Image 1 (tube, rainbow, N blue to C red):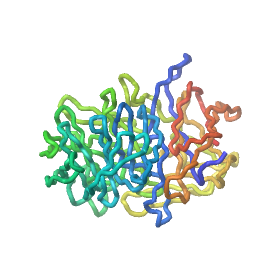
Image 2 (cartoon, rainbow, N blue to C red):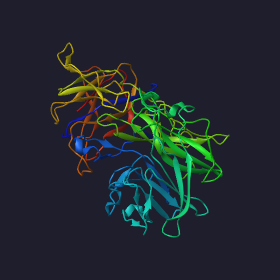
Image 3 (tube, one colour):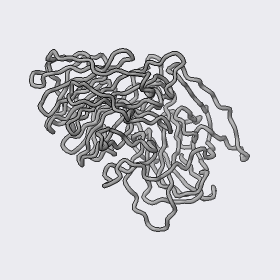
Image 4 (cartoon, rainbow, N blue to C red):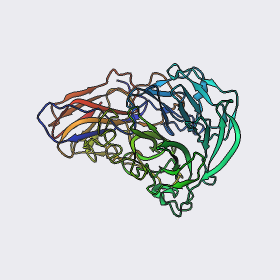
Length: 491
């Protein structure tokens, strides 16, 4: 079975309490979101190839959902916020969309904007499934990291800003006259690193020379008559990348810093960060915050997407539940616990791993936005003479193993450290010298997963040996759990 060239598989399992009864397995999802991320052209001049998804703009439209993502050559459609299908637009409007914005106006038209050059037309469609969009007959300037917001009265606002110096700004547009600017423009908010420690630049909010973080990714949510202006800081490549909010009584402000900031924050775990996102409302009224997570292995701009349930407390403060943020969580269709951690715990962490072959095993680390510290691990063997790997189960996206070949003879075997029932797997693939710099048809991840209680007798529980699914962060839930003390092999 063929894998995409030079990719690494990492196995992650979940466990729960032992039971003998036939179980009803809930619908779940797991961050980073399991979609077919696009390869980036950014850094292609340096021959750095990687997949990425960042800066999501998600909207509900006619009881379904659409997700727009930086430089993705298109967008995704879903009916349940879990399973997403890519839509390729009729024209290349989305080729370079950078930090896109989208807005559903009265369930009749979706508007879209975003361009890395900082200017362009606002697009619109009443049939996003078709991929057909039309541009407005005007050009809007200063739309880097933009957010288009149309209030209930039809007044239209464009927020923007991506800088470690300049603030988030807003200007008003005339929706009924080609989105021309009205002349109303204001500076709104800026970072205050001295008072807001989470806004300080660097990994773990530390940098040896800089403290000025980047403020970017403006997003607007209206709830109970209040306007929540959200923003991202301090830098997309860091584990502390998160979203905060200011609250006002008008789309133009003034805005007051929300005292429980950051409202979306995930500094630890396999994938870090929960910033530069958007807060949208599901058809049942539940709010969700979609954000950007830092993978940052091949490039500091290598990112993934996440989704967390979001709430407003009795004081009107907005907050997201990122507890166990990259573990399995109840799907949005759960009647009472949508988006909450469902209790399945990681079983493979620091499990003993043996591999079929090893071209290289790498550990990377960085505490700044500079070059990586790269350590090539020495080849080790176990008592049986098999090559071992310590980077497969260390829960770091910057550690990876590469097999000597890209064929069906390659395998990974992981011995679980603790007994428990296995409910699900997550395989996270690392891109290594793929040489891909755009969206490519025909990519697929093919593998089987076998399990054993004694390391001798094996049973296949997942068979994607003939799959055509492109799944760089494959999340697979079993129909029924199995096992106690498990060995797991993926091939």
